[in-house]
Length: 625
Ligand SMILES: [Ca+2]
Image 1: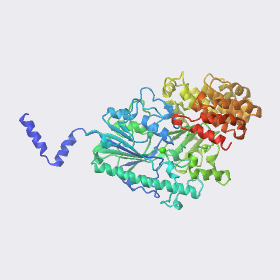
Image 2 (image 1 turned 90 degrees about the vertical axis):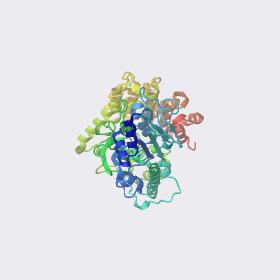
Image 3 (image 1 turned 90 degrees about the horizontal axis):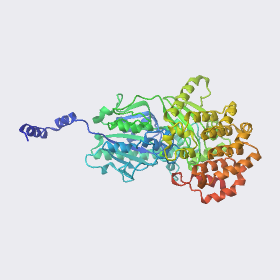
Image 4 (image 1 turned 180 degrees about the horizontal axis):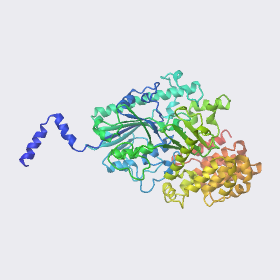
């Protein structure tokens, strides 16, 4: 060793601590560890968000040294599609993964973000909920080094940077209604939302929700202490967020702000100040609009990797941070056993909602949601006619469009879609929604069975980008026409039934169903012809229209078509589920079909991630018969 180098080594070795630190500073900064603390079903009901009723000292302390986002959205108001958005960095409406507990392959040429973190040298763990509607590519271990209830950053190799997710479940919907429970937060002091009735059940559920948040907060405190005790707090960027809005009806599962707004706190230690945005100040608030689709690109940016082009969100931290965006987006597809289709856009002040199935009430009977006392008492009071208009809204059919001013109406009960004073805002946000659909190539305009059948041998996202296989503009136009509910659209809807594309024909039949008997009578011949359509979804929509809105003779002709589509072994579980829903919508008019359905009880089991959704509808249909 040359003498000078040896001398330098001796010198460095004997430097006092502060000078050694100065030497370290001149070397490129190490990669940050990243810790995500997440929890179930939690909106921004934390002290740091101004909620004085909440007991969240640990998260408030984290927010006091970090930044919290005032307008963070989960994109989806329910677990699986929300988590699917995060893992892929893409909208599930684009990947065909929007429906609850469905399963589709990842688009060609894409990866789940932990795979990209691996490539950047990270040890990646998930403890432990996944719930992705996308197949994990490769063998076990390819996406996560460990994804289990044992997964922990402690198991990484010496010196390896880590990315670790911990998901707390104590705040889950199922725990809000768990009884017996003695409320710690005083139910008398709850702010009852304008859409909920003020009853003891509603107050108890909300109080329990806040109790669970306090328990979760203590857990977050322990997770942060563990990091501190390991001497890693200065080397670790911490995120905290909820996976979608509160586990209460009209919060969870609905793409209002009440279902999509989540708390998001980020703490960047001083060592990584260069990764923080310019306006980052300890204890600061950010007005930037961010959503789950932005998380994967933000992670890429934080570890120094340019977000890949397939990711549809925008990094909001690190060297690859994009400019703030004017809107965030939300959606709702099938929730458990019930179909629906909604798209949502918000800016800092307004929420715009487009309902593509306005003929269905908001509060369809999702069995799991009806286990919550609030849901039960709310429906009972509606049936008894004891609710105000704002409280009744949830149990009625939807308008095609909704617009809410979050500044003046935070509970979103005063629909401004018809307000002349808000016309320009409505048009601007409607345009933003339509541009988003076109930009990401939203494949949700296909009925769910066709998302799968059209993409056989490929992926829904891939075919979604192929105009020959998915003529998006024509299909969206048909859906807009159908669900816009304009009475003069009937001739166009009749024409749609003769279209070469089955999804256009489907929306044609749906549009007639949505307009009830006069439209069904006007298109009687076309609908009868559609009962023999080659596409099961078109037969289903036409049979629904004729059986629900037609004459007794129409019912007798159409009901057997629905019964034929009902066995899950015949056209797949999604067609079966749609057929069972259509039969159920007929009420007592479908009684003659019940013996045939009785035979299905042995076949129905959904299978895979759809679990027993078909069984739930069948049980409802056959209940007591
Ligand atoms: Ca959840």
